[in-house]
Amino acid sequence: MAVFLEGRVLITTGAVATAVAATLIVSGCGGGGNSDAVCADFTYQEDAQAAFRSGATQLDGDRDGIACESLPHRPAPVMPVVPVTPPPAYNLMTSLGEVIALTPAGSGRYSLATWGSLGSVVDPGPYSPTTSGSVTQVAGSAAQVRYGPLWGNSVPSWVSRGSSTAGLGFTPSVGTVSSLSGVYRAIGQVCPLGSPPCTPVFGTMEITTSGALRVCSGVDLSVSACSSPLVMNITRNASEPLGMFQAGHASAKLLASSTGSLAVSYQSAYGVGSYTRTTWFGVASWASSLVALNSTFSGFDASGALISSPASGWALQSNSPLAGFRRDSAGRLLLRGTDGLLITWSPESGLQAFVQR
Image (cartoon, rainbow, N blue to C red; front, side, top):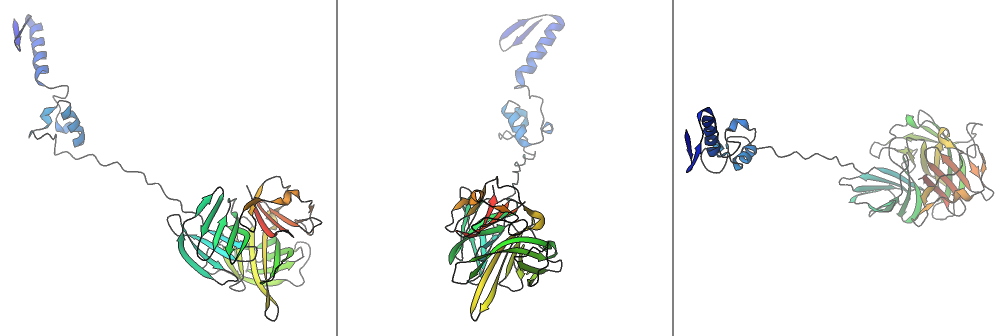
């Protein structure tokens, strides 16, 4: 039997000839391996179109170059949504009692609010922070603020508002007065308004569950009673940032962290028309430590430069002048918190706060 294909003669016989001829006829008119494909074989039109380009011309019934036009198109890929973490809020207090709140204002920017000797100012901004090394700066119209690396809930800070002063800050995390209850050790300074220098103070504070703040200079409340404490009532103003409290008067502020640290500032009269501003930085008794200063602590000097604490070179005596404190013969004072906070006072620099790094 002879099989003719495109002018050529293939000589074969019997069943073999029949099989070969069938194979040649099928392969000669199918246009590739997709010759038996139908639109129902595909989920999306794009897949049918790819088969059409590979030779499955039967998928284009109206010969317009588009295969299986009734099939749905492949959905566009869904891009994963990456959540944007807003910058943390900060409550800051300088060693002269100025208070600044940095509040996230969207798109990584901040608004500012200030309280202190220059009055209360709300500066909505918003302002974009700039970073140089481990120092971040927010320059608003009401104040220029710098803060350093965060350790736990504490951060060293520097503020230029009328004058330039270093200080301490916390990420807000304490919302109720009752959560502040306990005894605190604190170092502070008393500064006549407009007429420095400042003089150091040290002592203990107690905050009761009912919100009474008892300040006892030079007294260890865990050992003896305080005969004439300064007493103020702590209240929470819902319009102010979380972690900020009023201490008896709108101009008296208390900032607190959830790790047992606080900062307190209040104004007192000591004569006709004469006032002082007292500022304390402290740690809870349970959060204070006499561990050797074998770590590096960072803070700001008055010019706004980030520096390391010089306290490692001081010849300090432990548990002096009170338990949990350290003091040297030059009158330098030091408190260390287990949350990485270091509080110092020295004749050279006054009240300063440093954070472990």
